[in-house]
Amino acid sequence: MSRRVVRFFVTGRVQGVGFRAFLIREANALALDGWARNRADGSVEALAAGPEAAVAAFIEAARRGPLASRVDSLREAPADEAELAGVAGFGMAATA
Image (cartoon, rainbow, N blue to C red):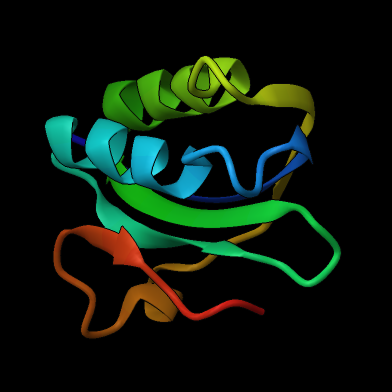
């Protein structure tokens, strides 16, 4: 089974609406490793790793977001397994 690592940035109404908590619940339900954090520009960044199908489901969930959110865009960026050194499970990271 192939492990995929992905980083993505979500813009829209994604801070102050439980977006990170939503991502954490979704990622843990899918048994992914990684983190989510707010960014100073008002976006949310996430880094996630796991089986290809689980990561794809996680990205689709992020495109929907929780009810109070509004996702304007989701942009993927290169990521590397080394960025997850020491990370087990999925949690919240400090604001960037």
